[in-house]
Figure 1: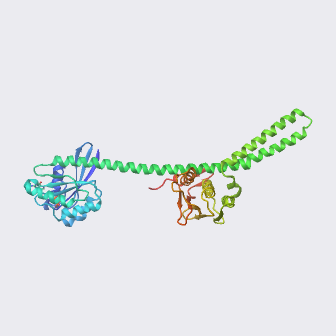
Figure 2: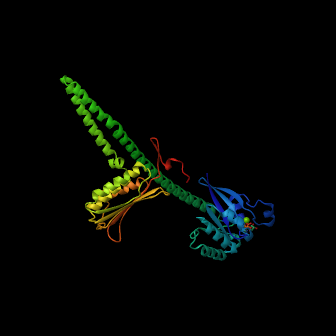
Figure 3: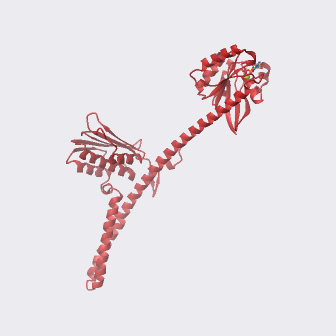
Length: 418
Ligand SMILES: Nc1nc2c(ncn2[C@@H]2O[C@H](COP(=O)(O)OP(=O)(O)OP(=O)(O)O)[C@@H](O)[C@H]2O)c(=O)[nH]1
Ligand SMILES: [Mg+2]
């Protein structure tokens, strides 16, 4: 069973409570004083099974202008409004006031009950309906059903129930769509977080592997080769041993070469040999025979995640290749800045070359630069500068992950508040 909350609204004595009683069998006026004075003072509640698994829960509000605060409390958060207008009196001040409150509260849907039709002739009913339609024109109730009813004779009550069921279904569909959109947003965020986590973990692991191979296994194998040579020298008179040892020494050297290749492929060697800043300087030097390069960067950098180092290095490498090969530039300014409060690193590479070609597609180089920034939760843009030339701008968050032993912890792994 699903509950659909309906709030009444309308001028005093127009028949809100009588209509709720007729629809539900429950008198929403439960206070002694309400019964004595024949008016609603406080909020009243009543329920009706509409069929189709939907229960309408009515919140009946007072129409008296002095009790408008209670009305406000009742109308807040309802799924639909039942605007009650007596056919013999038509639109009155609190009809307008309650309607405007519903608009302000953003109530999404509703219907109008033209009550006391047993007291009004057809012409009076038509006039009241016209005035109601004028009032609600251009609002959430424009086009809403205006049903002729009588709580006394039972006229139109089934029509009200059917309309409420329709509205409940619309509300269900709308709520489902909202839930789906929210789920989709959450999934997209989760996916991006997992992507960042994977890339970060992969690069940390590569850095660790590289160090182990470079500093551990490689030197050990190299020293084995030396020992093998010593053994060969000592066993020079034994030709079989000499052949065996020579073969072993050759194989060891091949293995050392394989490991060196592996080490180089794992991540740019310059990052570990020189550090990021010097590695970037080396890249600018390599391009400086064709283009005048200028690098503006801090004197030192905090320890950065391996993935950020690799992204900065590769984006620079790709951008400088474009400057040298395609831009026909004379100067290139590169600027690396850190926003330590935001934990963000910005890399800007601007040249004074021929700018972007008019029919530029996203080439592999441009795509991979963007990919490198986005997989870390950063951004990457390329733009034509007004003075001519091109500017590549990458912004990368660098505080997203902290390495704890071999485990990389990202903020996304910590439960987040919505
Ligand atoms: N003839 C006739 N009288 C009705 C009808 N609906 C309500 N009444 C009478 O109109 C008077 C006011 O009805 P309520 O239901 O109390 O009006 P209300 O809109 O709830 O009034 P507040 O809560 O004070 O704003 C009562 O005497 C009802 O019996 C109807 O459809 N036909
Ligand atoms: Mg009432």
